[in-house]
Amino acid sequence: MDRRRFILLGTAGSVAVLTGCGGGGGASSAMSGGVPPPSAPPTSTQVPSTSPTALTPGQALPDLVRLENASTTPNAFHGTLVAERASKALRVGGSTEFWTYNALVPGPLIDVFEGDTLQIRLENRLPQATTVHWHGLPVPPSQDGNPMDPIAPGSSRTYEFTLPVGSAGTYWYHPHTHEHTAEQVFRGMAGLLVVRSRTDPVPAAIQEKLLVISDLRLAPDGSIPANTAMDWQNGREGDYVLVNGQYQPVLSIGPGQSQRWRILNATNARYLRLTLDQHAFTLIGTDGGLLGAAVPGLSEILLAPAQRVELIVTGGLAAGASALLQSLPYDRGTMGMGMMGSAASNIPLLTLSYSGPAAVPVALPTALRPIAPFGVPTATKRLVFSAGMGMGMGMGGMGGGMMQFLIDGKSFDPARVDLTSRVNQVEQWTIENRSSMDHPFHLHGTQFQVVSRTRGGVPILEASLAWQDVVNVPALESVVFNVIQREVGRRMYHCHILEHEDQGMMGVLDVIA
Image 1: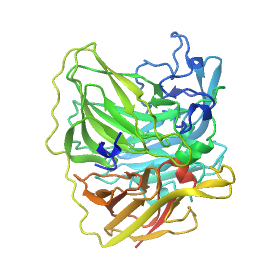
Image 2: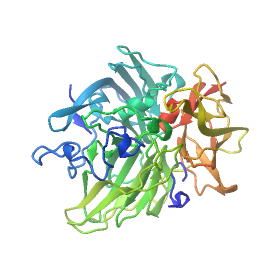
Image 3: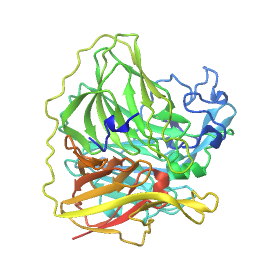
Image 4: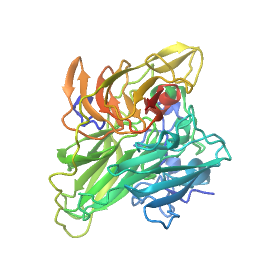
């Protein structure tokens, strides 16, 4: 399949509720404890229908659990996240230990408005240091949960920031400790954060659905196994792909009803090529919020790891009918002798089930919100992604060598400043990928506007403006975007295949006055 034909975003106790679990493996089933691929779950996980678990297909899609706001002050949100171990029975006679926020997988939903001031206290009860990174949000560098600001086991800290007007969008939070981000996420630590506008142009009659897509690998004893050497090379993909922590759940819709789906790809490395039988998607938003106008009639959407999307889905079938949301095969390339990246077969995600009386579809406004271009850049930057076999042993070490994932030929050093920018200056960045696999590029603290791409030496202008904080850079291609940093301090930029990030495919940007 030709990946260039797709719509590319970034291109246009015990667990109280198991509600997305990070994890999985890019290795074959032989490399992941003999676990079959996602389409054929191990029979040992199948329990009697009287005792369904999160791995029992056909259960109703669970809603995300909201984080409680302890503040009674208007425009203030005070909450507590506890990073802790928690267990959930996924197999008969056994349990699986996850690492969680508030004993929930995925973590609790943080639902706030533009203009709100957030105070979120994190208590770390894990055996490792951790942080909370507020992915995509325009927060001060000191509050961004970067790797140089770890919270030790048994310690706590409070993050505080105000969400500016214009920041409405679909975001998420996850750990960002160097060399341990991948493990903490695949063990369950990720949560959705929605910033709302009080003047949202999308009609309130369109029902909203929040979908956190994650994946999970289980060893034969029911535990979540560590990464294999192949995982460190290619990025971990799981054997179960979950939606809100549920395996192949059911989402109800009425004939003619329109729903607004906010979707997060919370996996370590899996690309999601989304399609819905007998339906077309209407794209209305990307990472940083709404587009200028809706884009209807899309048969596929490709979500790289960490990307988000807002879609309108309108029920065009009759009561009693159903349709399957699935991820189609996508070749993201691999390093070394690994399997082809991201599933060679279709992966069912959820069933859209029709019931109830017919409804009249709700029309969208012609314009959603204005998006103005940044203007003429006054500075430029160019980064080169590369990967290959180096000397010595490391996380991905095999046979006396290890994979090296580099930016500009360098591996991450938290004490080194790699790039310098000036606050409020328009910059144009070019990200060139010289490796044999795709890399999703993420820049902290801001949203950018993709300008163009180069494929086979031919520049291709971006069709329209959108706000993004992750862009997929396909193998042997490059992407150009414009960006402004609004806060002084140090920011991170990196590949969002978390195994690559942990192995050094990351750099430090110092934003100065």
